[in-house]
Length: 354
Image (cartoon, rainbow, N blue to C red; front, side, top):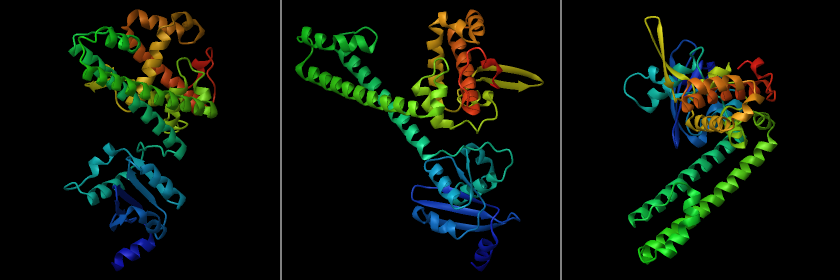
């Protein structure tokens, strides 16, 4: 105990935190690489515990509340580092437990050239939460629509594809084919329709709030000058990466949502496959949707510097492959605009470091 107190007074080189729901496990190394701190604390004791320690590097895995802990420790003078979980696994020794995890995090935090997770502000977390709620509501709405279709098919009634077709014909079907649909089943379908309408209202409210926030945020306004990028993509990107400081180049950001080909190299030869689909699935989906929207309007291509490239790409590629390539280009352009604080210029975009 005396050695631990003496070590805490002399300072640590690094401390690793394994963040749990109610408790935090701490493991600290001194400048000679010896473990001089091994403690479990309550979450509420975070501030009081670190106030008694001298500032040092503090590592933690990217998880729920990691950004809150990071901001709290930064205010106390520490240097927090949020590390992707996959980078800490090679440092785990012995069996997996909370102290071994904290020790592995502390060792990983000292590695040079480590790709860290950028610390998010509270505004970014708020915006990200809006996007997550909106995405969940979309999933619930799709599930509700599919359930209505399934119940109708069980009654031998098939409705043509599209939610609009189902909405416009639903009550006419229930009225005209009342002899085929039992009163109970009809009531169930009407209740599901009410759920559908309520979800539409909530999605509309959240989308309107996101759009309002995009108009207030300068970085979002710059991003929305890029073809295909509107309030949803711009706010999702700002919520995810802030000003893009975590990435050195546009192609690095393009790889983050998995918009680059898988690479397999051996014996000096390189084989490129389909897109990796690593990282943020949500952003990848949004950029691919934006690419498809641009491809639906070929008359507008000549307005953009990438128009000739896109025209050639659509000739030699399948439309989905061309959309993925265009999505990667849009992501790189968007990062460049976000990072350099410039608006989109259709005729000068090739000059950007994307």
